[in-house]
Length: 476
Length: 141
Image 1 (cartoon, rainbow over the protein chains, first blue to last red):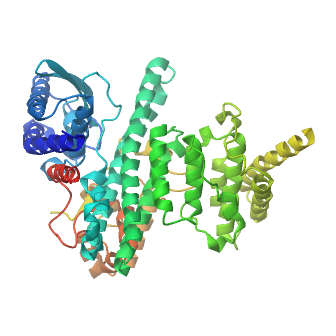
Image 2: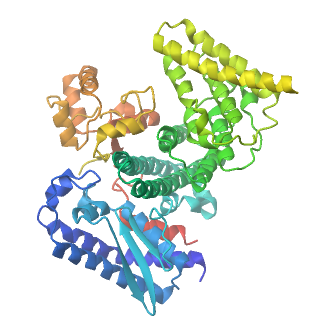
Image 3: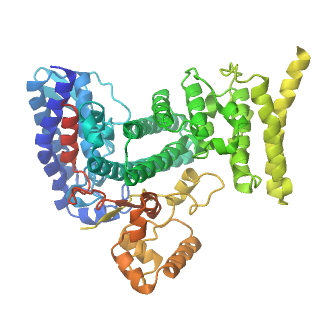
């Protein structure tokens, strides 16, 4: 059986059994105090929740164990269970959980069930023939493994798979020409993307709050804190991976649509609205990295890069995407095919677009840049913002944005090799820095002490680069 | 059935989130999606009550919320105001422009569940079984 057929088999079985699973979850709505709990529920245990008796908790846990015992025993008749097929089970179960709002109440999710019973997480073994499958459960879902290797964040399928977007590039291409079908699809994508962002914000803020709570503990239990911190950070990577993966798939689908040509004006408007919606979403995904210094793992950054490339196909003159491509490529250790940033910045500002504020992409991967690269991006950012605000000069908002990109020298643990050698030749960075300085200087007209300080700070940073260069030239 | 669903928020400690989620130099109201819903159920509700009935957490500073609320009251004549907000949906002219419509949803903190589909008006959110069926389909060709 091919892996495709196996997946199909497993998911159809889950589809058949889903009602039983829902019955298990529903069964807690009869427990006293649940409706109050559910109404007040916002993602973590409601304060003042009296808890449930051990008996009830045990009972419900047993129901779940029995469900998976039955379910996996049904699967093993059709499909051989190894860690690969178990991953499909895991993705299918958690994808279904993502869509599951029990009794039509968005507050009644699987995590409500877990939190109402006050279970942090639990593990159990399911006997399948002579073998055992280990299952862990937490508020984010289920993980399955034979060897005990679990992904930190229970995995899910990309939403694009649920919506059948991947089928569009083969057989269904003809239906792309039917406006009504496409219109409908794009509307569905808009809705699904809104829901995806809702999930991202919901889970990301839960993780942010958990992480913030750790700061209080920091001094008392350093070891325990670092273990927890690590697991939160892995969770964030897993969550971001799933979100960005789905987003990149959406974007790929959109570029296929645009390439199909012959779109009506209405459809074009819907597509471009979805396009900008996706862009705002991606800016949100960058927040943990750009604001709270979360370091995205490489497998997440690769998905970001996939998104950038898919978008670039139809927006080749968007400077934001060039920033993103350059920084994410550096962070994943990939060669940059051709860095166009300084080339673009020489051309007239009406020739290129800045679809979003690129400061987030620079901050998100600042930890991997060499000091020189970092200065290059900062200078380029300053020039780009200045070009786009012209004929006005930079205002306080943009000055603060630029200042927020500047990192302390300690961010860069060691002097790394610059990957951008060609681009860093004289006409690259050296023409940019005077322009950046000029832009910042022109913003000087405002008389505010704090702002003056910010300006001095930026200028000092940019100048220090010039000085380094001059010293190098003298040494030669 | 409600045509719109409020976005969930983990409001465990909303003040903490503001430290985390708001880019430097921006106030909550300027940041897309961080602002409070302009969708008020009725004219006479206070922002707090309105938020409660929408199951939304208000976490912009009170002064900003009040400001927005007043602006909203100025924007629509009273008879439209009630109708608009009883139905909790964007104005018609907003619906016709996709960018404006999505922006409305984005900023209001509400997720559109109905009226998004042109062919099948009954399709609301996907249910878990719909999702699983979609997956089965995507693995069979």
